[in-house]
Every structure is written in structure tokens, then in C-alpha cells.
Length: 174
Image (tube, rainbow, N blue to C red; front, side, top):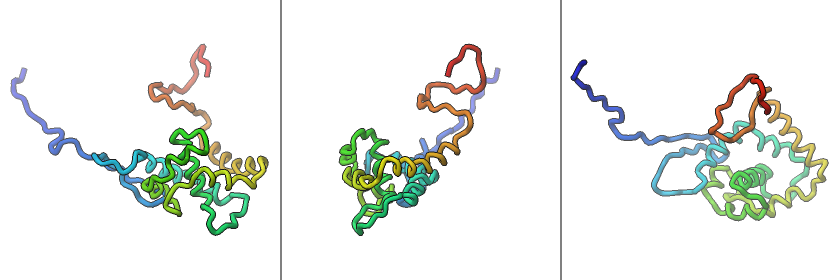
């Protein structure tokens, strides 16, 4: 047995500060750990990057079937971003969008044209003139594209403690 020991320095400068760069609707955003907090919703940078890559918000905004005539109307893409983000943050009613409305960092990350997230009245006004059948056909285009992008066999489960196994096993029900 060799009694000589060698010391290897694994982290000479301590733990490196991780930085993540995302291309968001509002431009490039760099996310890193900090002691100060700009917004409690820092993860929205990754979400915005993901939505931009999917193109679903852009697609829905371009296909919006009702003409927007008011010069003060919030752009359709901004209303959709605010609605999706409100749902993502646990909003179960349109009024829950109010708690996010004044977060300027989130508005900048999402690229809001007016510099803030719109309120619940923008959601209802945007959809007020749309019949249910028109709304269904409007959403169907993007839904079809999203489902077409999914693999033929997938498991929609958010439980990260489950080890996913593909294949066939006796007496297993999915």
C-alpha cells in the first residue's frame, strides 16, 4: 500500500457562479444567483425562451381572427403572454393576473410592448367578440402543430422522482 497522498484542488476559486443566458421575447437575459432580488419570477426567462422557440404565441397572435381596431389595444401576443404567465404562476381566475401586473422585470423579459403585463380586463375584451366555434378553430391550428411535434410514445408526468421506462411489461397498466 502506498502511504503517499496527493492533494487535488477541485474548486480552486470556490464554486463557480453559474450563469444562464436565454433569448427571450424582450431580448437576451442572463440569469445568475444573487443576494439581491430583482423579481421572484426569475424562471420566466427560461419559460419565455421556451415559448419563443415553440413559436406558439407568435402563431396564435398572427392567426387571431378578430381585427383589433383600437390604437390603444394591447397587442394580442402581449395578452397571450400575460395570460399564459398568469396560469403558470397559479392563477385560476382572470383577476389573479393583477398580482403580476406591475412586475417590470417580468414585463421586460416577456417583451411587453407597453412595459407592463396587462390586467384581466384585456383578456376578456380580447375574447369578447369571438364565438366559441371561432375560438376553437383559432386554437386548433396551434394545438395541431404542438401535438404533431410530440413523439409517438410519451408520458405526460411531472413527477421527477419517477424513473421512466419504455417498453412492454406484463401486468402493467398505463
